[in-house]
Image (cartoon, rainbow, N blue to C red; front, side, top):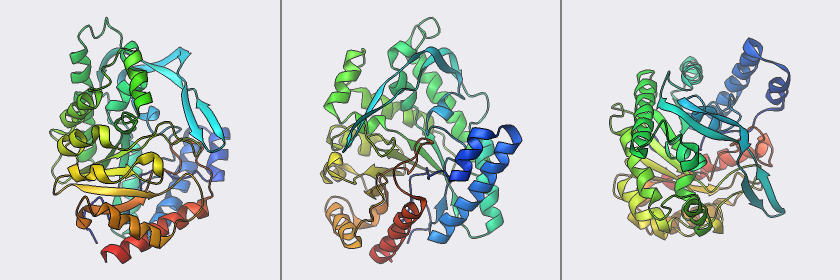
Length: 370
């Protein structure tokens, strides 16, 4: 088993919110809500530790959205109160729509203070108090998500007449976030990035092209900006990225294997590991993993978070063997394909089913890697 992240058995980050916490979010504010969140986080940390995981998150329990709660705390970015975007998600029963407020880059982007600093400090201190040696993991959206969510129309051209200054400021703000969260003792940081997976879908690339982006090369821009954000990451910090094709109420937004972005993504993105969605045919085959260089870790998201049905351990082992034809077995780990609750609504399974899946991952990893 590995002693540094990503671990052989790992998970993406978000977890189903308990019913008591959902009620608290509807009725409480301020310190009272914070106390309810603290209680729920202590309990979910205990559950992660008892399941056998070597890292733990706070389940993203203080967030409504995996990414927008972070993005709106960056200086210079706000909600467009008079405009919404529509994201269409798909499932076996049909389509559903997610219509969040559009974002606007209304001023120079900067980091006023480290985002989620208090949240990370509470998670860190909770794990220290438990004394089990479990590593606290912080998840944040990648810089790409600021651009992918809004596109060129979201950037005020009076603020950024030269778009290169937008990209420079964005990566600088992220670099400062990485530095300051590292100074707080964060050694496991994850950049969540749906854009790099969405770009494998021709329909998604067509949407970007229609709004004026260079869709065929956008992944190269995103890779450069993430690398700039990580150029001075603290020594001893592991940074991974998670890529999926959408996760909202057990539904998805995009399809397609990693083929379109694979060579540049795996060869050029300067992260330590890749959390990759591989739970069904939407994700394609393992062939793109041939581009993963030695030393980089791949966390196979073979266990779905979109339903409560428990996977077969034998099937998981067989699929790990299939992936090992393209990248060394010792560079592989196992996880769910995405979070269980990327937004506060959560996916369509129970908490017991969620932890049964995490336990299955731990047991399978122990049998495969020892």
